Image (cartoon, rainbow, N blue to C red; front, side, top):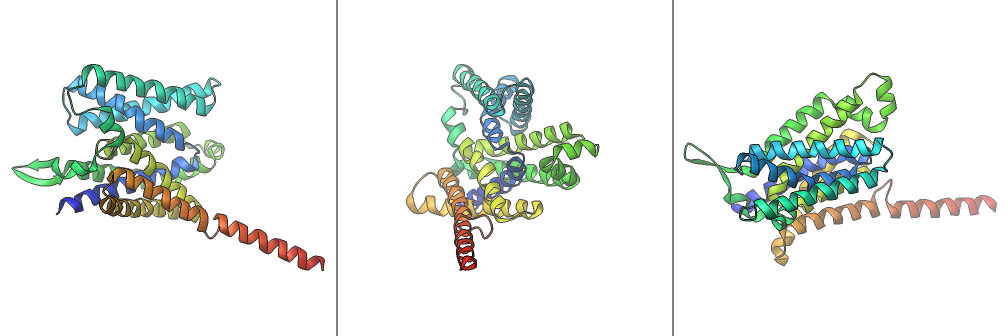
Length: 298
């Protein structure tokens, strides 16, 4: 497959992996926690490198997933202690991310772990970092990692779909039904951490945040059914990746930046033209209501 094809596939997988998880974050009003975890995983990646002295994907995955869960735990702990959720996210986010930046500067400044790469990523180099088996290239490591995480997420969503759905819409009802709300919460945070780190090295934190929030928010405007929302969110992520890549090629700009901008553009279209929640639809509905009221007064 051509380099162009691998880059597009990587972007599409990021859209699918992050977009599906993002639906539950949107419903739980935890979108900004995705932003926090997508940055704090830098600390997990650095610690994993310092412990293992290796940039192998499995160590990065374990380290980042651990810090992602730690981030969620700290935020919940502060929130339960009376700190507002947004303030708790801000404190944990900045503290752990700053610690990761400091460790990179001190211990990993000569390793491919620079902060600019972590934030922006460079999906252009994905085809060069391939998985080798018995002397044969099996394709980019990023594609294999993202594909594996996507499979894990889909299996967990299929097994715990009912629990994830109920705890996202009505946690109190879930408790009354005997559903382990805390376990489901940390299960989702673990899936979020895995999804983030699988995407992190290839595309950077900015595109990860965009893919975690924008596709789910777009799908939220287009449907009221969770399963349709998940499918639409994945589809929006795929379309954003494709449109972003060809836009970047045409204008010679950052691929990750163009993909993130495409996510925002697709959300804008849904915000304006959604048949039920779109701004124009609401305006037309208000005009029709005023016309009908005026007609009834006559």
